[in-house]
Image: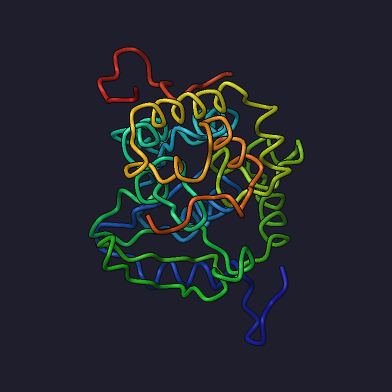
Length: 268
């Protein structure tokens, strides 16, 4: 890999960060199953630091991604949410948006309280992440985030994966640029269309949840009822990324019940 003015490669810098901030109890590793998480997990092994890995199940995860984690990362603990994405639509929040991202708070951010949390965040990914720091305390969540690969480029990520011969989710080879939550508010319209074609049952579950919320809520309780004429129109606008009509900030392989009938969590 390329080196900086001091002769350090991205790997050298990441190993230094990991060793410098290692807490006595070890890190809490946030593992998503994506390419960045795969690289970060390997770097932790190379650094020789302690870390327990956790995968926050969102109930909107692409089935091939979940299969990859189960097959190649058996040491990762699956953290199941108390309620599914669909339950939250029905009973609490409605659909998420870029300005109302309740899904992150409810499904992705739990876990790691009081710990140093390792993340695969990279500055190159977005303008917002370019403003991030390697070490970021978060009082709201009661944890501190450590981002050892913040300085890595996408090309360096793939170069490292090839050099280390690391397995990765097959979705990347099938043309997917991101393997995060399906129907994410930040996904582009072409990604939404592809996801809809790949996992239509998941989309149908979301629409069913919208219908339930619509039927069991008043206009005061559900802002979408003030903007759209039906739950179908509401859902179609969500899929089409119709920002003009979206509610304002004022206000099929592995389905979501993938853990089996014996699971007593409320995923209804």
